[in-house]
Image (tube, rainbow, N blue to C red; front, side, top):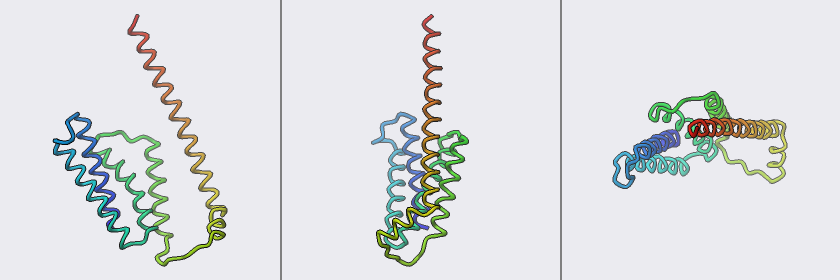
Length: 163
């Protein structure tokens, strides 16, 4: 619970700080930026408390929800647009985080290097690694193509205005 509230606090704090930067106000004397810094700091304190009293695996899995909270806060407070890739990313992050939280064990288990290697070489781990690698490459290629089209469009606009 501390981690979820801490993650949400961190997301709200970052949104406040970004709002201040978008308004181009000096950050050291801007109440919005200072509020964001304090909220972000409190969120991190809550995350630290949860590390001391909870299961590290649960804390790590639930702290991944920070990215989900960041996106939600950005949509409502910063008026950012939600794309298909954002929806896919939110789904993957949420499902992966919830899967880790559901499957985490509450008792400590010591594992040998051989057991860790067996877990890494398991079909589900290999499938996950391949999926993440392919998704990353496809996302990178799509991002480069989008940037190239934007740059070409901007260059075309520059050429049209010089005529």
